[in-house]
Length: 307
Image 1: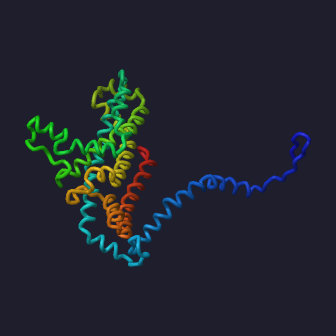
Image 2 (image 1 turned 120 degrees about the vertical axis):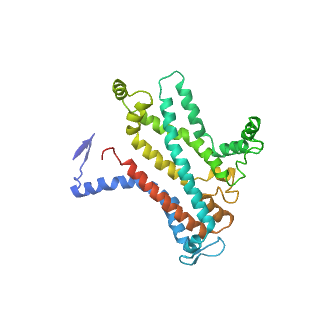
């Protein structure tokens, strides 16, 4: 019983079991709107794509069940294997650079110097630039009469310049440069947060023991930054697997499919050839790759040194 002003309210104590169920149910009620949105925009389309990978569907006729025929076609598709090799090449070449180079930048901008914030802003600026703008700008730089080839000709390093985007030997590596340029600042900020959590006392103690200069970073910084290194490695690997915008803007997968990755091949089959079911099959393979990397990322997040 509770008295409020001139009114008296009589209520019964809720059963203990009901209160416990209510406490357990409340968080899910808060999650329900987000789960509904995810179900409509993520989970249902994913299940639909999984179903379509076992059918023949071209947006015109109704889906026809064909079993694993799309997977057999995928196994015999030379372009798919080429795009898979290109994607793995992207991983092998881009990820090590995005793991190591941003750490060096983070160490540089972590110094207590006047105007160091301007350097942080300068290194981070490519991250906030739209990939469309960045791709067009780099495409101009890579042009036959672009700035890079003009520099090579003036310095007599190359008489005719380099076909950066028109040669099968150079195209994918030229696109990789843009990916690295865009990602350096982003991963630098992650490393910078980790560096600022390292106590200065450790570096002072290392200096007394004779560990100074580059050696102090090898003895102290790298071991303490290991969780951040692993996290950046997994995140950059997932991003490299899903690369699309720079390829679409700069090369469109050419020449001769030399810069075509799995994501671009999915786009090409779905929206240019209207092979929806085959695109879903390719997307399923890509999903399994990203799922493996995502599971690895969860393991990294819960990993602790010495555990």
